[in-house]
Image (cartoon, rainbow, N blue to C red; front, side, top):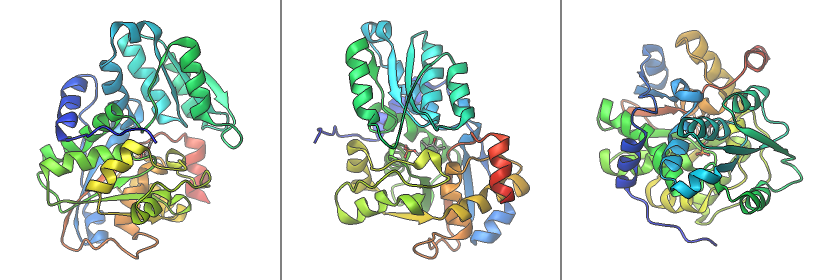
Length: 327
Ligand SMILES: *Cc1c(COP(=O)(O)O)cnc(C)c1O
C-alpha cells in the first residue's frame, strides 16, 4: 500500500492561485423548478462550462504547473476514459510540453477526437482485459514521462477542490454538498474545501448504482474493488477509490449514495429542457440524487436546506445524447 500524504485546505488554496487565469471561474446556476422539486435551495456549480468541458482541467493544470524543468522536458503521461485525457492534453499544450494518453479503445469518440485535437498522443488499450496502471508505469519508465493519474494524486485532488472553493466563495456556507464520485478526486478535493470554508456542511458523494464501490468502501472502512461497472456514467466507471482519495473521504465525507442510470437520463432531460444546459451522464450524478432521490436510501434529507450540487461535466456528443434521452 502506498503512503498517503496529509492533504489540507491550504493545498486547495495554493492550487486556486496556480490555476487562476488558466481555468474558467464557472457560473453557479439556479432553477426555481429544481428548488421546488427538491424542496430546497439548490446551487448548481456548472463545471460543464469549464475549459475542455469538465472540472478535470483544474487538477491537471495544477499538477502540470508544479513540474520541474526536467519533467517539462520529458512530458506528461496519463491513462483515462476521457475527460482527464483532454484535461492533460490541454494543460500540456498550454504549458508547451508533450502529452501521451492511454485510453480504452471503447472510449467515447468525442473524447478521443478532442484529446487528439489538443495535441495529445493517444495509446489505446482494452479495459476489460488489460491493466492500465501497469501500461502507464511501463511507458513512464521507458520514456521518462511523469505519470499524472486521473484521481489518485495529491495535486489532482487539490486542483479539483478549487471547484467547491469557488462555490463557497460565491454563495457562502452550505448545509449539504453533493458531489459526483468516480475515483474520488473531485469528492476529496471538494471535501477539503468544505472543511475550511463551510465546516458544518455535510459532504455526500454520489455514484452510479452499478458501481457502488465507494459506498461499500466508506461503510466498510477499507477500499473495496469491484469489476468495471456497467453504467452510462462513463466518467465514473472506476473499480475502486484511490488511496489518497480514500484517506480524505474517510475523514471528511459523511456518506456516499447511489443513483440509477434511468435517474441520470431524467436529469439530463431536466437540464436540457428546463435549464437549457447540456450535461453528460456522469455530470448528472449529484443533481439526480437531489432531484429524483438516491436510489438506495430513498432521498437525501434536504428539506429547506441550502444545497450545493456539482455538475461535473458536459462532454456527450449529440448522437449519444439524443439516443439516451429518446430511449
Ligand atoms: C472524472 C469525472 C467524474 C469523477 O471524478 P473522480 O475524481 O474520478 O471521482 C465525474 N464526472 C465527470 C464528468 C468526470 O469526468
